[in-house]
Length: 273
Image 1 (cartoon, rainbow, N blue to C red):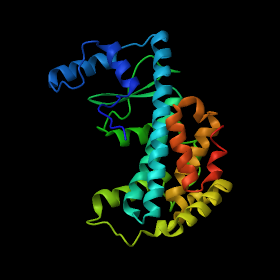
Image 2 (image 1 turned 135 degrees about the vertical axis):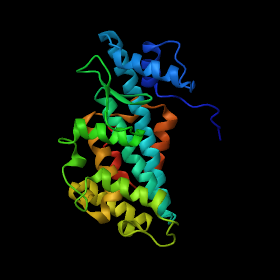
Image 3 (image 1 turned 45 degrees about the vertical axis):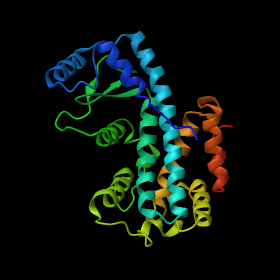
């Protein structure tokens, strides 16, 4: 096993920081310097050349988020098969979060942090904009709000509701119950929304249903697995993503091995192999 001794920062964030102020240090917690960088950021005008580079960074970041989405998804399935339902809820919510980031970035929309959350629509603007002027958002809140701003009327996961809730809000609520509101995990019991996924065989059967009929993804008993599957399908098809071309062989092999491990062959048809 190879242990990672460092981590990669978001390419887009790094590039934008370096263009706005090459001397900026994101680890510097001096409030006056942070404020000065924020003011510079709000005034900065990006050139056409800079935006082309940003879009290149966004594409690479998007592929990394897509990989993280797959890893989270299969970790969620593994936890289901091992009856660890609580943690599976968290993993499947994170799958949606990473897929939201993936789609935003593939559309040329950058998320940028300078004390608060901003975005840059590289196709239509030369300046960053605040995601919400009235509220200080965390990364998850900002990502969801931005996704809704750009795709709330068109994305497949916004075409219906789950228990009368916007699907991502339904997923977020389930995750927050597990992470913050419930005093303990329920194992070996599980929440009602896992009833259809209580074994590896049921996961496989339900996956086939969801892939063949999108409407299952919005039913409470299928949604926790169905919504990520629906968004995977949309992104892979709409952006014609071939996993052999966007990742190193070891990453592609890892994802394909997980598909084989859980017998989810139907997913392979969307990987543009």
